[in-house]
Image 1 (cartoon, rainbow, N blue to C red):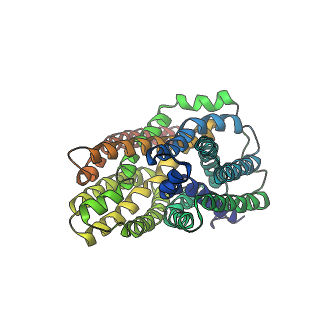
Image 2: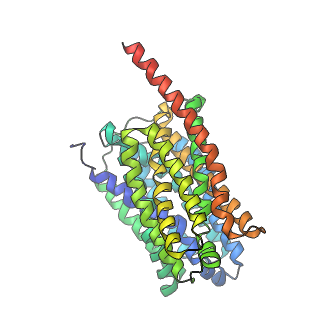
Amino acid sequence: MNKEKMPLQVWILTLAAFAIGTAEFVIAGILPQVAESLSITEGQAGYLISAYALAIVFGGPVLTIYLARFNKKGVLAGLMVLFILGNVMSAFAPNYLVLMVSRVITGLVQGPFYGIGAVVATNLVAEKMAGRAVGQMFAGLTLANVLGVPSGTWIGLQFGWHTTFLIVAAFGLIALLFITLAIKSTGHGEAKEIKTQLSAFKNPMLLISLAITVFAWSGFMTLYGYIAPIATHITGFGESAVTWILVIVGVGLIVGNTLGGRSSDKNLQKASMFWALAMIVSLALVGLNLDNKALFIASTFLFGIASFANVPAMQLRVMNHGGDGQELAATANISAFNLANAFGGFLGGMVLDSSMGAGMIPYAAIIVPLLGLLFIASANRNEKKQATLTANVSN
């Protein structure tokens, strides 16, 4: 296999990531319909998002510990079967409880699939392309925000929210067929014992890497989750413009994901510091340009680039320090992303409801990522020391 080109298998993982990412975020676009259909409040419908996120945070690592002993092709295929079943169950849910359970089932898939899939992706390419392979897979998640969520919301408005979940399940089925046909059963490394995997978490560098994700990433959802109220209440856009603003941010996410993957392959330490700083600067730019529609759009586009350029570096660093527990470490990082998302959503909501209002959200989003910079600086120092020691020993 020519390891200079991105193999077909990585593109298949991208398609699966697209389906999973759409399933995660599309609920936000169809919340009012779901609430009306099931005779519940929109707040109660919002708990479906929380249930999904909590399934990722807590269920993902536990499931990965169990699944790591099995053949990776079989695991990825099995997870997609569970994903399809979860979405079909959502589509035909007769009541709130069944829909809640179906969202938990679907959420359980995301952590192990992204974690194990990222390991499979890096094993399919040369070492110098590992960052690009992870970035390529996570491009599915960015595409879900640009294409999947607006399309799923439109389908929900035209044909009902049940149809949205059936379409998502259909994408899962296509991904399952390609996984079955194209990903080899061998050559992805043997699974380690549970004890061996868990022992990876004794490595302080792995814990610092996970902390980087939690702290440095928290600024993303603090702003992204509240772009709609900021755009409509402060900048003066109409509600119909919000979809297009999110599409523009989504294009920025794709650009950032590509740049982040390439720069992480060149120099992981420099890339992680640069992009974390860039996201903080972009948040400040959004805050400074709230009164100008054109500059607001430009700033949110830059925010999209700077924020998602962090993703390959964060995932790659965790995998580098995962040792024998690489799959579990990669999955734990997905949990770390979702913890950051949960915190960011909570912080943004608090600021929005406070006397400060929506205009302060971009500035509030900067606070926690500043702590993330300290963790990145610490990790970079330690990695340089380790590299120097290794060089000295080999000489």
